[in-house]
Length: 348
Ligand SMILES: Cc1cc2nc3c(=O)[nH]c(=O)nc-3n(C[C@H](O)[C@H](O)[C@H](O)COP(=O)(O)O)c2cc1C
Image (cartoon, rainbow, N blue to C red):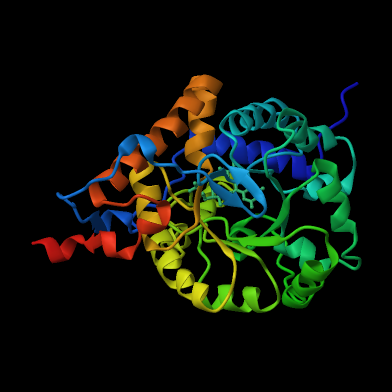
């Protein structure tokens, strides 16, 4: 007889179903990217064919400044999905995050849903993942090393999700001790720690606190894309008319503010939260991000159109970025900076 899926497994499955079948976008809040335009540089001399978007993600060279955000694992449905996502990431030589590995701490039943990523992507950067409440309540921080070893992770993400836990039926609201344990985690595990949100954004104040204890990557996961409040509101069958649906700091605001900390700290700034095309990503770079990342957009294309079209979509998105670099006179990604952007309100 098939063993019953655990509560966490069922929850991960419901998340996938809701993201793929319901509208979980923000209602009136946006990423803010639409408020910017590029300054056309009519005197460009850039050779479009010579633009090279390859860069480094921690110490591995990647072909595009793009990461597939942490999504799933720990439920039977995740096996083929994660295998497919890994094939896409491997083909493109880009980093990929696994979904929360909380289920893998509980038992080993679904371990393959995570390790399948490494099997299909032997050398690209693969990033582990765990939620804030797991860190806050952990008695023994060493146990997280096992999660890293399971997928031979190159970095480890901790996701901060107080809004999601607040709205989740049975959410884990114990965050006391989080900051102290995060500091221990940074010192204990064998790989760099990245901290992300899940759609409500990381402020400059939070980023500074994290960088101060040695966190090496900040992923904005800002508002304007997938609303995790929305997902939990739908899951709990509550009225959809809930003001927390749209809670959070817009992605463009987070990038703009957090990137100012580059003067003081050495870290990788990942722009995510509602990044859905090459224009969004290019604006994220111009505002100060090192790489862009996306979850729902990639998941939907993969589910609806398959592996080949997903690869083509991501390649096409980077062709768009190259065209933007050509038209703004930016030879390297680092030249696609704030000087190439203008707020639309200044144009009229
Ligand atoms: C189906 C799905 C599952 C997710 N699961 C996780 C997770 O386990 N851990 C995590 O850090 N973020 C998780 N996220 C959040 C994403 O990594 C991302 O931060 C968020 O969806 C915002 O990005 P987007 O607007 O591109 O979707 C998940 C997202 C989706 C769509």
